[in-house]
Image: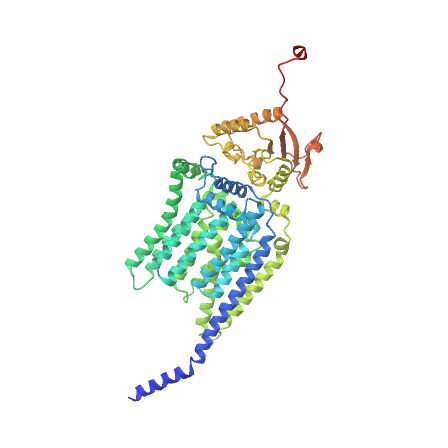
Length: 578
C-alpha cells in the first residue's frame, strides 16, 4: 500500500507540475538543432541560387547540346532510334523533353531548370542524411553536395545528363531512409523506381540499382530478430519498382516500333567501346581527373572519405558501417566503365560522397559522446561551426568563379580547345541573319548550334561523330546523310575544320569529306570565319570581312550561306517574240 500511495503521489505531481526540466531541455535542444539546420539550409539554397544564376547563359558543350536538341524533338513527336540516334536508353530523351517543356528551349531556360533540379537534390540529400543520422549531419551532407556539384572540372555548371542521374540516385536513397523509419514495403518500391529511373537516363546508374538490392540484403543479415517474410517482401518491392520503370520505357519503344533498334543502339554498339582504353592509360585518366576535381574542394572530399576510417569506430552501428562503405564503393563504380573517367561522370558519385559526409560527422560525434559520457552536448555546434568556417574559406577562395564567372575562360580551362564558345557566337550570327524557314546543317560534332538556332537537322544524324566513328554502318550513314542534305538544300552550312570537333576515327570512309568539298564550292559562299588562334582570343570575320582573309590557325570554323538560285531562263528569244 505504501508503494501504491507513493506512486500515486508521483503521478499526481507529474500531472500538476508538467514535464521535468531535463525533458524540457531535451525537447528544446532538439527543436533548436532543427531550427538552426533549417535556417542554414534556406541560406544555402539562396546562396546556390545566386551562384548558379551567374551561369545561366554559359554556352553548352556538345553533349548538353545534343540532349537538349533531342528533348525538343521528343516534344515534336519524333521517335528515338528512328528520327534521331543515340546510344542511350530512352529515359534520357524524355527527361530532357520534360526539362525543355517546363523551362523552355533556350540556354537560359535549360540552365534555370537544372539549377532548380540541383536545389531539389540538395533538399533531398539534407532530408536523407537527417533521417539516417541527424539534422546537423543533414546540413553537412547538403552543403557538401551543393559545392562539390558546382566543381568546374566535373562540369558542375552544365546541364549534363549526370545531374539527372544524381537527382534520382539521391531520391532513391531518401526512399531507403524513409523505409528504415517507417518499415513499409512501398518505400522500397519507390526506391527501386527512382534507382531504375537513374539507369534509364544513364546506364552507369545500374551500379546504384545493384547497391539498393545489396543494402536491403545486408539490412536483413544485421537485423535481429530476422523477419524473412518482411525482408523478402521489401526486396521484391524494390526489384519490382526498378523493373517497372524499365518496362514502361521499353513498352513505349515497342509501341513506336523501334524496340529492336533501341536494343541495337543501346546494347550492341556500346560493346565496341568496352576495352578500347587499356588499364594503365585509364588509370592515368583517373588520376588526372581526380586531381583536377579534388584540387579546389579537398576539404569536402577528405571529410567524406574519412568515413571509411571512422566506420572502424565501435560506437558506429554495423548497419551504418556497411551502408557508408558500400554506398561509396558503388558510387565510385559509376565513373569506371570504359576507363575514360570524364569529369561529368563524377557527378553521379556526388550523392554518395555527400551522404557519407553526414556519416563522418555522425561517427565522430558518436565517438566523442561515448568517450566523454555525453558531458559535452554542445560539441555538435562546435563541429558545425568549424564546418561552416571551412566552407566560407572555400567560397572565398573561389569567389571569382562563383560570383563573376568568365565563360570563355571557364570553357577553355575545363574543355581545352573545344570550340564551345565559338559555336554560340556562330549560332547568334545565324539567328541574326536567318529566316524562320531557313534550315541548317553542321559538319562537325557541335549539335548545340541546332538548339541555339531552333533549327532541325534534315538528317537523323545530327551528331556528326556517328558518321565518322568507323562502325560497320558508318559508310551507309554517310550516304544517307548526303542524300538528306542535298534534298533539303540548307540555307546555312557550318564546317568545323577542327579535329576535336570532327572526331574522325582511324580507317573511316572519307566519302563525306570529298562530297562536302565539292558541294560547298558549287552551291555556297563563305560568310563567316572563326579563326581559333592558339593563345589568343578567337578572331571572327563576317560577310565582307571574309574576302581575302587567310586563317592563321589550323583550327578554323567556316560558316557558309547558299548561293542565290539562278533565275529561270525563258525558252523564248527576242526574235521569237517578234
